[in-house]
Image (cartoon, rainbow, N blue to C red; front, side, top):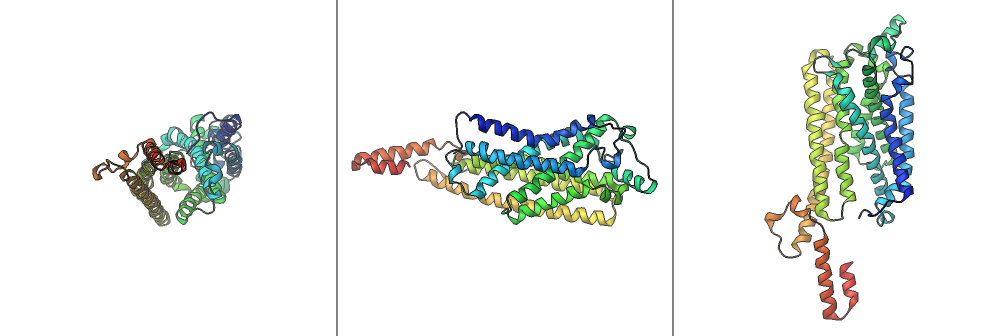
Length: 375
């Protein structure tokens, strides 16, 4: 059971520093444009005064430091009394949930409030800031486009938010695969899809190959990346599954909520909207891009469905455990079985055990049996 009471200063400070380290790189996108002279920063470099490699290194370094702080100070306190009994793999998974949620929340804010307004169903994403065309102009004509000359401060800030969100998301997935290599194959497949998609879209040499169609390529990628960012909701439900009371009824509700969030994300952000953008601008893609995106969407959907299936199995298992526990004492009926009815505090069960223990102690004249039943 998660620990209650006041959090020690060391755990609180470590938690605060961890959030700063995790949130810092994504939100740096809002301020980096004021650090460098935009007359000396160019569109072919995403209007950044630094390289994407530097963004990625800062992101993953912050994640490494944050995971160390959370793992040594904050998370052990949240699970005080249970932490010492957990196996190392479960400890790393719990730390991973905090890290992933911490990265995806600021990335979601950037995507929703800064990047989305540059999306168009007919023109794509950032149609007025084509990084691929700018790179080709540099190579072909030996000319550069200063960012101040081609974009406003708001446009530059949004472009930074787009690139930093992808870099941060890619960094957290790379970090998780290295930190928890025991992840199942479906998680590996999911992470690799997103990592490769992010890598290709962050490389100006690659986007220069399809420079004319880059806004439409990014338009599909935008919804896939947004779906990955908004996945902090289903991660939060899984974390609630672990942090809640050890009552199977509560755990069933948490996991079922995660399943629902995952299905919504899959249907809206991973299939319906990306396919709508793809088919709505079909002539703007060549056959290679059409085939690549269709294969990516289908494979990603299959992986997500498998992940949902695994969660549904866990939900069913916990519901059965809750039904068995509640059916062991009077009053439960078949009609009452369900996530809502099971999600009651386990105090009733404990009170029942306590009463049985006291009765047994009186009948047998022994306090040892009572203690065993209560435990």
